[in-house]
Length: 371
Image (cartoon, rainbow, N blue to C red; front, side):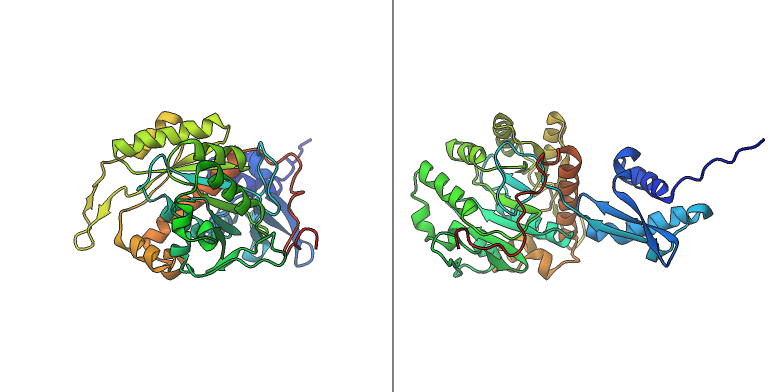
């Protein structure tokens, strides 16, 4: 007697394709795939990704459909395959902030490496990839986010004089000490006052539901930065550096600082990696070459992105017109989006979900406490 082998479920086949595409185990991708019913009894598959890659979904969908088409037993139509994203809140050592799933510190061991520019463009890149994103300007002594968002004269509103409504610019929610006090006033604050200002900005802002809050940290690794890292429930950190030895030495200190406070480092972003001539296309490595890659390998960290030295990045930052909004199809925007996808995937696939789930997510909009 011959026994026919039970057909492999289409969800399992989709999980196998996704596992191959993302270089993962099939057991992990299987949890993303659920069978759905479309057009009566026809079976479909819905894939829920734990990271944001909206710009790549058409390519991913075409790939899955093409591979399924080669197997007539599992062929799906375009309407039978769907994708969505559900970002989970990852575990932190400190209690979470209401409505914020993940807080990511963007830091550098020294100034002048483009940390704030990277922070704001990463925030917009994550937003373009489908995430709900906010940014907190923690650079108390030199707040630059208001300039790059083009709303330096704006001020947060408060209904009870205790809690602030974050500002909205180009779809991104933000708060900064630059919206509250003149920059010259903040520049003379002592360390404890600066640390208290940051925690107030974070805790007294009525944030909407955010998948990621990007925190633009002050440059350096001194007491202020260490105190901030200890007082903020950071999910993880990203280190920004340039390729030359001096910046790499300071980036090394940044990695060590987060290790001391048990904050995972997701990876490095190498800024000003090269200058590409617009006339001939030649790349000049002005600040040395592949230094960020070498440092990442030394610490067993991924290099999330290598961003060029380009006048358009500076122009858009100074003008308050976000690069990813004004020039979404430019090669530079593509570089930031690639880094954002790598960041989102690294966070989702290497960290553990919060043990108590999303209990701190209260929904949009939230009321003022005590009202």
